[in-house]
Amino acid sequence: MGRILMLLFVSVLVLTGCVKKVEPKKDAKLEEAKIVAGKAAGEFMKELKSILVAEMKKGGPESALNVCSDTAQEFAKTYSVKKGMELKRVSFLNRNEANIPDEAEVMWLKECENMMKAENFNKDTVFFRVERSANSRTLHLAKPILLAEECVVCHGTDEQIPANIKKLIAEKYPNDKAVNFSPGDLRGLVTVKMKL
Image 1 (cartoon, rainbow, N blue to C red):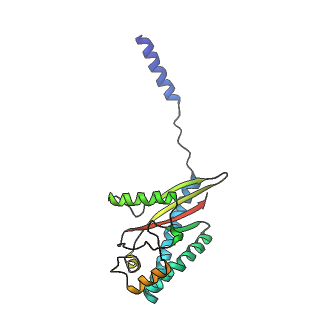
Image 2: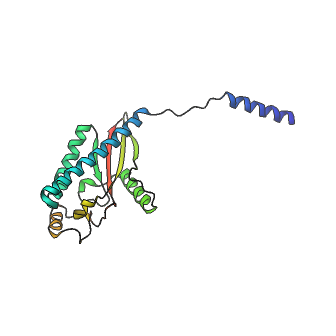
């Protein structure tokens, strides 16, 4: 019996020594797309913020609100065409009806909220998934948007938002939910979809 066990043990050693470890194949196309999409999302938000800040300096919060309501949507479309991908901003507490999150984005927003509650949130967090259809794959990537100090004039508390801005918001967005934020709060996500 002891000899049989010894033979089995030696056989297992020989067999495991002959088996090569196979590493999973790296998806170079996906990894490259994640870098490109993440960079595009960051640049998009940086450019949009510079437009808003410039407009705020030039014409005050009223001008910045007009940029958010009109220019931002057009800028997203133009930027998407220029980059060959679809970029947009989404939020649970959206101001514009076009910024409602889809199923994956809802999951990511909840994950961001949970991370913030647990105090392990990282503003550089990136979420992604690959969406497959018959013959194509699409990268869907998202990065969190945190409220900047300058944005409380339109997104802050009732006391922080001037009466004229409240009036404009009510006229443009009767179903507005994008208030009562503080600087550093999770405002939403910037999302990118690109073909692989």
